[in-house]
Picture (cartoon, one colour):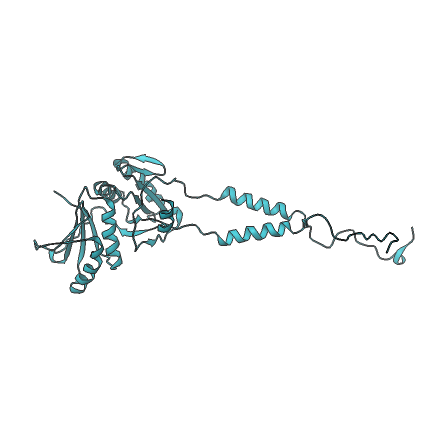
Length: 149
Length: 141
């Protein structure tokens, strides 16, 4: 072998560039990580007909501090996919309210045709649980719902 | 040039794969940035603390009695005079009343058989008129 450069300089074997061949793997890894760890709302929607209100405001609270209480047309109450009686509402909501350090907001999602006597019972149960902030949830997007019908 | 006049094409036949990762990242970042989750909307209300009862003089109360048909009976304080209205007319009424008496409280009394939507309609009208002092009750007897 002939000695190049007079034998003083040796070409380095290490590449001067960052290896980019694994970039796609990293991207997929991140994608899958976020897909697995993302948690959406825990309860499923009940089949209710929403009420509508023009002056409805966005609920100014973190998603984890919002508890949905569903009330169907026949007065059945659902919290986190569990059907509950009116008497159970206080015992279920009170510990959740205490655990959230009184930051919990109750989102009441009632069917538009439910007789008001059930709503009144629900409100009394919430007052007994010490809840202060309540939102009467109305339709999210009126145009979308109309198209679906 | 060769003798046969054939030229070797310098265009590669495969789709370039080197930029796939860049495209994946671009899509990932685009969707991360543009995704917005729908926020719930509703009518806010503050419930009273348990055992908390406020005494209000009758002349500061505007009774709004919601009938099962959706008609609202409006009664001012102690007077027996009843005015019938639709829920959509309540916001105009409230603006009038509050300019006449700034301490007025809306007592929304709903009939037990009245559908929930009529109560929401009245509450909506009161919110539209910036009413803050609202009491929700059920109509007794």
